[in-house]
Amino acid sequence: MRCRAGCGACCIAPSITSPIPGMPSGKAAGVRCVQLDDDNLCRLFGDPRRPAVCHRFDYDPELCGETREQAIAVLTAWEHATQ
Image (cartoon, rainbow, N blue to C red; front, side, top):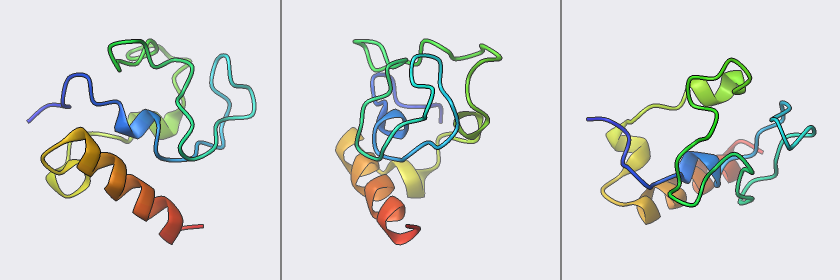
């Protein structure tokens, strides 16, 4: 399965410590990435400026669950567990 269209959970829930265009200090957990468009799609997808950590996110049933809300809940829990 491919990423759920309009999900964007991996662009909101986790913290990202590497620079992102428009967010030079990265982003805190729960903060929407400035590169996430109104349709919850990454503006940098396929762009070499996209942070390396973002390339590692891919659809995984354990991570993504059945809904966007489940994905955000799982990613938030993992974020807290790894702080």
